[in-house]
Length: 200
Ligand code: ADP
Image (cartoon, rainbow, N blue to C red; front, side, top):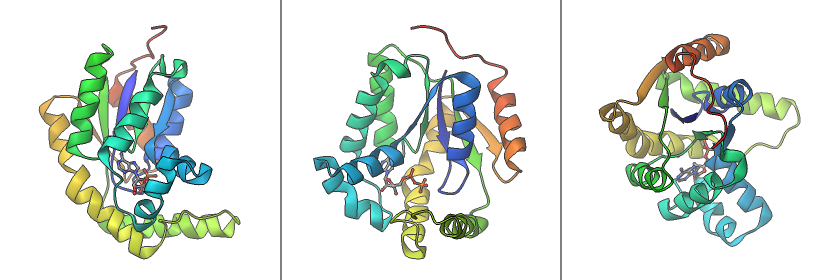
């Protein structure tokens, strides 16, 4: 099974992706996690994106596209994957279409977690406070200014993908404001009991 999770920062993509990984034996591919790992490791990609990420803006398409293409060629992606945080721009979505076609792969669904934007900031601020309370290190972009930039980037650059995938008839929208288990059930329902593909 190959899925995309679409939704603004704080919509719960990571939480639901984790659950889908366990239920379907597929991998979660978070471009945010991949880029943060590159920053931590101090790779050349990491150097390029460090300041961009801290500001809350999006990294260059070509860099993210190349990273995803390499990653889905790995053996552990054979059973399928959930893209979390990718694509985030129309050019990225077009690049993904191209790479999937080249690899003879198709998308099963694009799941949009629809949330009320007015409460997103609140949600993320609560998440940051909880992390601090647990003594965890908060992300460089988890501050009010970068959060506003992340939400603005979503609105301007990523929200157009809702139409992009609706036109291709793969978009499935669920209510991301419901309690976590209800969101999970709603995702299961839109996937219609689909099982992970076995083997190649
Ligand atoms: P969020 O929790 O805000 O959805 P992510 O962890 O997915 O954040 O991404 C954090 C940051 O990593 C983004 O603000 C951006 O700088 C960079 N990033 C992640 N995915 C992409 C992408 N597909 N294209 C460009 N930049 C990306």
